[in-house]
Image (tube, rainbow over the protein chains, first blue to last red):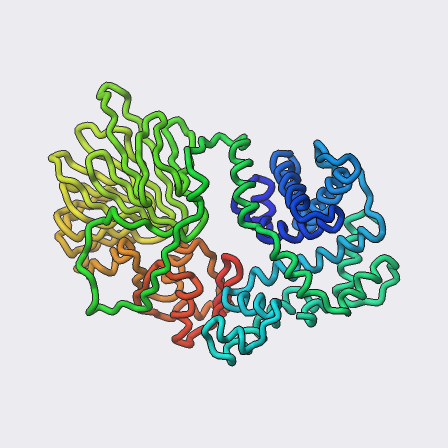
Length: 176
Length: 365
């Protein structure tokens, strides 16, 4: 993980690719809560990430980076709503979260962690989990992936076990 | 309490399902217990992160302050070509005849890292997969199907300058030198070559490459960190990775290998192994040492050595939960174009170990 942060600080493509994998969609979903527009949320996230890349911001660790990203997206979204245009710089201190927005941020981060861990699962287990999120039954998944229902069952429970372990028993897992 | 502390305290108290009094978090707690995880995650999948990343790359590359010259490339074809040929196991009886370095098919990329050229001036150029040609000081080249075709410099009076091509882990790359010599570079390898050949042809290799040398009367010399191979026109393989014995395997023709203390001449089918005990010549099955150039992974070694090779091929890192696994011996051959997961599945069929792949970490347990 230190390697990831070092790569982010050095503006290396590999680390920024990982950042897009794990953060892009959650940050969009987060921005959309304030902006109430799918396309606008994507624009704000893209612009903010580009500004961070071109800035000289450095991060101490993943916690620091994570909070900074939420803060920057929050500020830029609020600025946009106020002035109807993008702010010209990232400033991670001007806006303080209101209590409800703070709670929304905590919630987004919990789901983001689950999303990140799902992406780290081996290919087949990840596919099974994603299909089951889509509401497919074990039998339907088995047919779609051309594997036996028992394999689906086994792989799904292994995947859930890994998710549980890696998200330290967050209650979220039991909702899948 | 700083914002960061507040944030992570709140997160932790929810994760631990602790009783906590922070009023504004009650809504969040309620959401968990209502069961919206699937809905939230589905929402994430409505954003196209791959497309967003391509846009991001395009825009940040243009504005990059690094001293890297970006080459002309077309976004339309930016997706890497991955050919999913799966040949589970090819046993000895089906072995194809040794083939020349093919110029036909593209070599699939198994990692996102790009090959680079380091110019005599110290400048580094990346070679995008979609790039067509390079024309910068001292290097004129066209690129087609993972092949870099270098052309000679017509001006014989210009100074000879050494350039270097660097192939990262997870990639293989073909190079045609100006004299027509074909070189297939393996992962994590680099080759230093001049902008034009003079009375002799001299290049420097680190890592592994297979050579089909064009016979033109001038000697052809490859220097690797521990010795030099001199040839006249021949096909051979050099493997000279740091921390491993240097191996030169001759398929056709005649080569001479010399290090600081000794010199040997090889006949076809022979291999010289350079170790602490000096140079030793063996008669070998050359296929075993050159299978990689035909897109195959051949292994007949303990797990530690097999996996060291796999780390280069797939750009992964292997960790062992128990040192004992390193000594298990495996023999086999399969296609390089499978995924790492498929490769590990094959090995684990022996039931000697289980594995888990997490990003680019492969854990053997």
